[in-house]
Length: 117
Length: 111
Image 1 (cartoon, chains in turn blue, brown):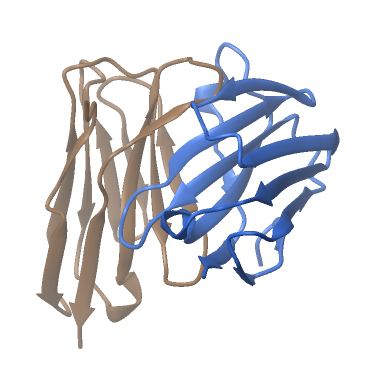
Image 2 (cartoon, chains in turn brown, red):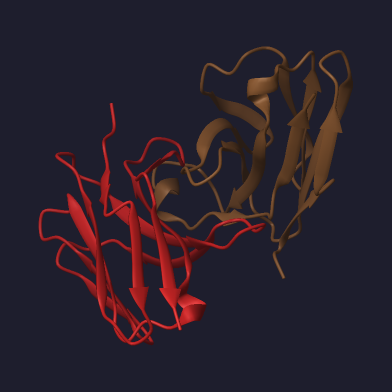
């Protein structure tokens, strides 16, 4: 069982819909991440939150809008997505993302499988 | 630019065989992490190596970090069908938690 919980597990939406992906962790981690993963490929970093503040945005299109309401929750708001946005969206957390944050293991959720019609 | 070259990308072997997966870079990493991902699940951390020359063992899996901290290898002894999955190496360079992933190795172990 993963300690990072993502909902929903599957999501099908049209290009004009608005939906949100949710991620929750209760390990006391202060860094949280959103990744996009295509089949058989490595995860691609989208956003990093450190102590509830956005610290890294990897030039992600504005149709993806992250939100960190508190230290345990991370949301990804979706609007006007394109078919090429269909992918597995992974959330991860780590103890921190500070100077040595990269040395700390990232704990991944099982992802949300997103399909854009 | 792919900073971490992982090979092979695909590997299909028989149960009981040994295999090695390599991750190579021209850049130095502060640490390197290995993950395994099964279909329908997120990546699961196997090990983190931090010190140049470090060797870590996890049952039949042996991980090595190069002396210069630019490369790493994963060796599996007597592979089992349960080892099947996508193996990912990921290097850290003290950039706010950002990991540089290799392309992944899709391993299939046939009984």
